[in-house]
Length: 462
Image: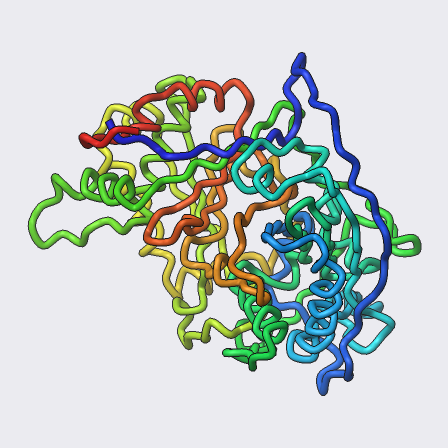
């Protein structure tokens, strides 16, 4: 029986009664600020309607782990910092600060003040690359490697919009990045990372960012933020996720992905549009997670996809548009038909929801928000939700700063709630997909014992 070929274990919050391993401290050696080398022509970038729903989410965290010789660390970091200053000339909103017009309460990025990117240099010289790439990484270690855990996007009013940490490992370097999610989405994140890597390699960037956010939506929306304006202190923080969440990375090789897709499409009538790779894998995950949660047959479960709207707008925008151009697309069903029907039932629900989110649906969602702007919190997802962010199409393993591709790309703790999935391309290349999933500890234990989730048919040996 063919099975998922690797499971990477990450404890997001230790389950009650669990034993803790001795922690190796990450020692901070230096903190500095890297600023753009010239002021932009447009020093004020107003946030668009697409950006505003994420103001009460947390900074989006990514960790990239590379193999290098220990003695190369100082040279590598200095070169990456020089390239960071250069790339900020193109991606200048990341060097700014959030601000709010005192008169009309419109949020914008101030790009001409005393901004810059926070840079931390640290060392964890007892930690090996393999622990972060293929082994178990304790929560406390992850928190020390990736900055801004627990920091909300609206705190960008007083904090940098990008924080970077270089940590020297025993045999490599850990690059932890925290991006303010009200400023950019996943597409823009990896455009920035790719461009930064290209400049570090002394190559020109391959695509210049498009900063005109009025192309996405010209409306100016006042917001009442849950903060004390004088002190910029949170008045109504986003609820903290439960303390029993567990994260795992399940690696689905290309052969398994093809079998899932074949199973979902096997019974479709002729001339019916086939299900995509994403729809097939998402349907498999949705059904498996619902089964692992032991949900009552008549309960409702929701699936949410954060869909890129660049190509869906009435006037499409290119991938180079820098900002947020995503919206959550929802579908749902009772648990009984989800689990008792063949895979094409779930895949069909997902396909219909995604394809119906066209320019008209996007416009309607924007208008609805503009009439009644609101803050969004984890509790809005509901108790039986599965949500997908990131994409296996993002070139995360092409971020080469001159010393090879990452050994592993992972997410930090932020924005992980019960049922949240992040999809990445498989680190070994091909069309494999890594699924980084967070679940309640009990449900995760059930899922890991679920042969139907981990083995999807075929004659290969694990």
